[in-house]
Image (cartoon, rainbow, N blue to C red; front, side, top):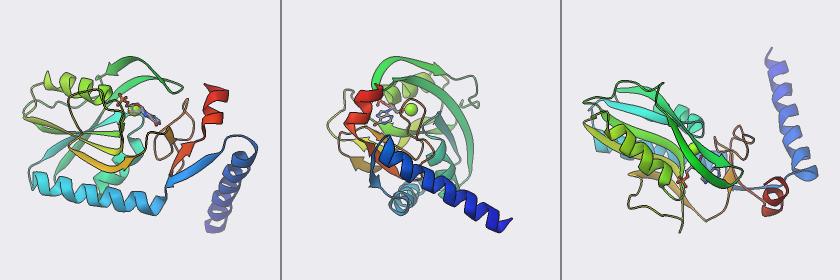
Length: 199
Ligand code: IMP
Ligand code: MG
């Protein structure tokens, strides 16, 4: 069983390498080890902020799933986990934002921490914060893995961000391009020739 798992994993890795050279090229921006160190240090900041106060973590689907799984296992504090779904992107351009809160936990009088993959223009997080505010939580804060430099179009910042990154389109660790690449364990820049081909 152990051997089989190892060889399956190996085959999958070989597939990425060949798909990189023949199809889309990706350039690693943050490797797995760097990401985990960043998530650990962000979780320490979050822990310092809330102390032992229970927190309701709301992950923004789908991009936050990998961060959500790693973050909640690092946070040594009382917490509940729920999700909300937003979608807006088609390729790399923003369309109209849709928010689905049907799967969310009851957050009335709770301290809420929204978790998302990336803060780009900031419109998504601003709308999610304002929507959750309508459910009368005790407080609302936000945490993201990545914050893009020089893209902000709103009057808010995430309360916690693990990494500031340059203004490039990135994939992996939950982030997608047309629903692909979410499973990469690292964050990589998708080269613009590949965006143009597929966008
Ligand atoms: P914003 O509303 O412009 O801040 O964009 C936030 C959402 O857009 C994120 O939750 C992502 O789903 C998506 N997004 C923004 N930039 C990127 C990127 O570089 N790669 C993949 N998704 C992105
Ligand atoms: Mg998203």
